[in-house]
Amino acid sequence: MKRRQSATQLAERMLAGDSLALPRLISLVEGESAAVAEIMRRIAPHTGRAYCVGVTGPPGAGKSTVVDKLTVLMRQRGLSVGIVAVDPSSPFTGGALLGDRIRMQQHYLDPGVFIRSMATRGSHGGLPGTVQGVIKLLDASGRDVILVETVGVGQTELDVVNTADVVIVVVTPESGDAVQAMKAGLFEIADIFAINKADREGAQRMKAELEAILAMKPGESIAVVLTEAHRGVGIEELYQELERYRRAQEENGELERRRRHRRREEFLELLQRRIRRRFLDFADKDGQLKALTEQVVAGELDPYSACARVLGDRHWLDKWLSQEGPALSEAEG
Ligand SMILES: Nc1nc2c(ncn2[C@@H]2O[C@H](COP(=O)(O)OP(=O)(O)O)[C@@H](O)[C@H]2O)c(=O)[nH]1
Ligand SMILES: [Mg+2]
Image (cartoon, rainbow, N blue to C red; front, side, top):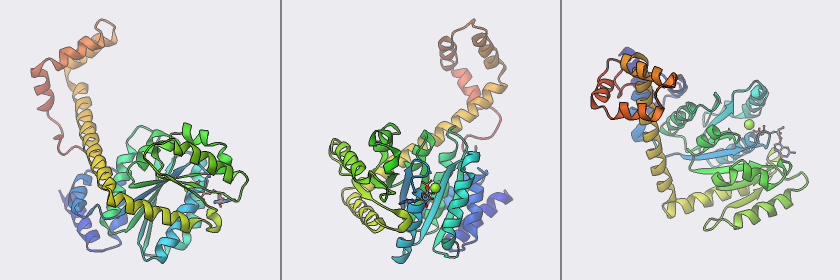
């Protein structure tokens, strides 16, 4: 109870503008603390103001450099920025994160920029929710823009980027042809393409290829921008495209539609996770269910019949839902 009170107090302090409260709340969310539900309840009325920009693409494409340069530009326009860098936790990316740190150093002294690195733990689906929580905290803390960088390699990363209002996909002429990007599912999620490292050979050809593929997508106009992020070239144009996209999205109701969809997904996902966790807990303890499982394991009963037996038995379902243990409404995650 005490911890819960202090989490609420922390949330109050953050909403009142205390900059020390934000990193502490983020740690609670990242640690999947039992106080997360309370924190989310408290900040909910203050979310939905920030514009969330996802930046994804293959490793080394220049995502961090693009994020860095966009941040400089947004700061010049007086916008406060939150940056969430999501990295798959592989020993090989440790160096990249360090590189990001050094590059981002200029922003560390700027209270208008808040940077947080997070690691994905594989693709078991537990993390995107955590990232969403962190984004909400940044949003409620009053950031104008939130930049979310993820490596576009797996489903988890694509899921994370789906929590954004707009997605910039960063590719390079080296990433070979546009077909590579297509295979990685990047065409489905891209709202704007940035062909970075345009100083390298093949940038113009890549642009033509991408535009040819995009022209086949009906009803959508997806901009392709050439950038040389390390020198800051093309970043202004990229920013203009972002602004244009946002205006269109606000005018045609697409932004609200996207957010409504996201809220529904989040709710159903949370519900599903809790029911699942509670059920597994029950399956672990209930003798009758364990015996049934054993029959399936031994090959004496097929799983479909076993399933029908469980779901067809009101008594069983009642027993499950009324079991001892954490209430569904309070269970974490
Ligand atoms: N030649 C060239 N190198 C770049 C450009 N943009 C970024 N880089 C370099 O590419 C490397 C990877 O960039 P980084 O932003 O860390 O890529 P990320 O893994 O996608 O975040 C770094 O050494 C950057 O300095 C560019 O436009 N041209
Ligand atoms: Mg990076």
